Length: 360
Image (cartoon, rainbow, N blue to C red; front, side, top):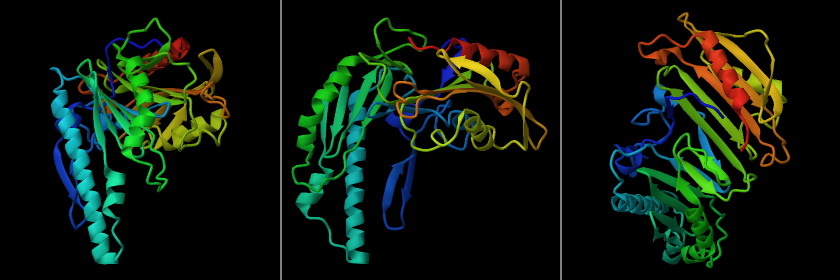
C-alpha cells in the first residue's frame, strides 16, 4: 500500500502505560481502579471524547491468538524495570480488589468465599524475564511485554476457560505456553513505518513478525492522519478472521457499505449524498469490490467528504481471502487553521491508495 509522506499513526500513548494519570474509581464500597484508561489516539493522552481519539476509533490489532498494543515512541529509552514494577503493582491491586469483592459478597449476600487454595490457584501469577521482555503468566493464559526501539509492545494471549481442575495452575501454564512465547520473541522485531522487510512475515505498526505463513487469523485496522492535513485520516483494515461484531457476515458488499455510511462513518451528518458515479468498481489486491465517495452536510452548514472502498472476503476462510476495507475520511473541524483538503484532492488520494494495495 502506497501512503503519502508525513503521516501520524494512531497508537497508545506510551505515558498512558509508564506514567498513567491517577483517576480512581469505585463501586460505593471500595476503589476498583486507580488510573485513567489508555487507548489508541493521535494525541499525547487518551481521551475517548476528544477528536484525536475519535479519529482513531476504528483501529484494532488482533493477530493469531493475540490482541496487541503498540505504543508511541518515548523520547528516551524506557525504564523497563520500573515498568515491570508498575505492571506487578497493577496485578497485585487487581488481586486485592478480587478479595474485597469476595468479602463484600459474603457480608451482603452470604455468598461463601473461595478457599485460600482455590483463590491462590486463580490469582497466582509469575513474571518471567526474557531478553528485552517479560511475560505475565497466570492459570488461564499469558501476556507478553516487549521493550524495543523506545516503544512498548503488548501481546495479550487468549485466555482459556476455567476448567475448575486443580491441575490448571500458573506453573502448568508456563510449561505449556513458554515454547510459544519463545517462538514469538525470536520472530518479533521493531520496524520503521515505511520499511518493507525482505523476508516473509507479517507487518504491524512499527513491528514485524518473521516466518508468518500469510494465513494466520487477523484483524489489523490501522488509522493514519496527514500531518499537513489533520482533517484527513486514512484507515485500512485487513479482516482475516470472523468478526466479533458488525454486519460483515450478514450483508452483501453494497449493503455493508451502506450500513457503514449510515451507522459508522460521519454519523452526525444531517444528510449524506453519494457522489456520481454512486457505485464505483474498484480493485484491491487484484480482487474486485465497490467504492463510494460521499458528501456529508452538518447542522452548522459544514461539509465533509469521505471515500470508502470494500472488497468482501471468503466468509468460510477469511484467513486465506480477507475482507479489505479502506476509507479516507475528513473531519474539517480538525483542520487547525489550515484550509481543509478539497474534494478533488481527497478523491484522488483515495483512488491512488486503493490502486496500490497488494499483498507482498
